[in-house]
Image (cartoon, rainbow, N blue to C red; front, side, top):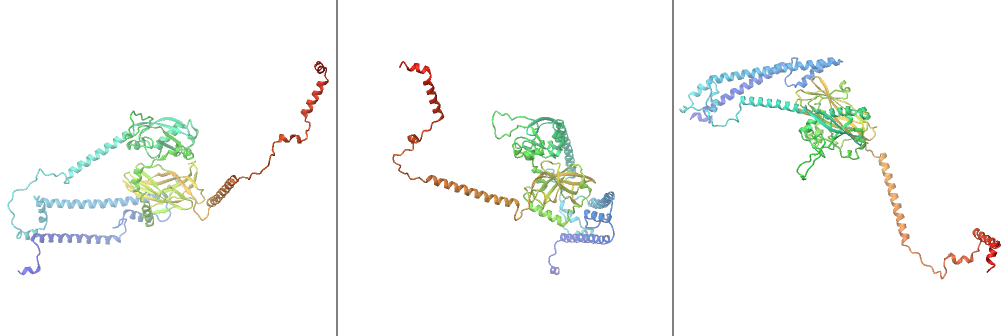
Length: 584
């Protein structure tokens, strides 16, 4: 009874479990203390890698130390590559050490399992994990085990849900085989020939036929169209591919889309399918509204200048730009619904310096042209102004979304834009400022959004202009660029207390109101005159007939009367007149 004063302390198995947990905690404390000592010893030593520092911070710090003062471009690139290779080598060494430690731990566990043997019961490991001393102490306390028969596996139990490394490896190999097979099949589809019937539209149709591959983009198709039409049409020879538009089923298809995408996705336009490129009609004997129409019309190739000039006239008034909503929402995460939230995040990122925006001083990359990289898709959204109207002289913001489908990182260098005349895309009105980035990148199979702030000149006349935006980036030290926006936007005047337009409209309104008042007054006077009746005056038997008063007027001989009298006198004097008169 003397031991009851301390209270109930549990069974012998509980005591074993408590001692085992204490030893585990002690081992963890020793490991933590070793890490602390190692960190304290390495903090004072010079080196690239430090505990708690990210790769980008290490690269930035080392790069700043190496590029103090004026350096050439070749030295700049060479030092950056050297520092990156050093960091990668140190990271590889770290990973190798960790793998060796894990392999040693696995080997120790396997040796322990071989010594102890495979237990028949899954819960026996909790009792057998103790040390030898604990086992000796527990031998006297553990009850004698009942003599039971041997336990084995039940073959009727479902075990497919349990982890199996061999089965998972087979599944992964099968997935990889199917993926490669699918890619081969898609590549074969892209290389298949495609005959396209199109019509060059300049107010009248000029139908032609062209043969390309299904994997070709709309831009490549328009380049082939330009080569085909250049001998016949002079305006086609002097224009560029960027100034040509392809309109299919009343939708303007952007240049980056390919015919393969339209065919695979079964895209449809406003008046028919976008995956048929021949010309045929939908002939039906029975009208059925549940079945979509299968008629296809020839796509139109038009100049941008002609479209901007005649877009208020049919058929150009029906045309709209094809918007890839799936890509837009995939990149932006429904940023139209959360435009203010995205803008706040972008502003916070700029203030925190996470993107490393360096301003307008960019390398020579911003003044050169490069080709786009495969596997990189871009899109543009005006978060605070969906109507795409910009006030002259004030800053505006747009978000550039990028999706990296490649296998390496995409390092963002700069974003630039320019303003062009809408009726002649070759004339540049203003080159907007280029915005550079230091440590902005997009990992493989990831998406990112970058802000771009620009401002048009306050002296720019209000109207519709073309905006061309380009993002410049690097992949494996090779520069590329992609056009994220090539369309129209509206430039408006800054609203002030008084403007020429507002004053003109004010006085015009006053003049119209005055004219309306004068017209109403004249109509009222006219109606009042009609309603008044003049009083009748008694005049007796007096008549107003002029023929009755003819005897009062003196009769003056007229020229005709004088002539008739002279003729009559001559007839009387003649002998014939005398002969006719005598017999009577």
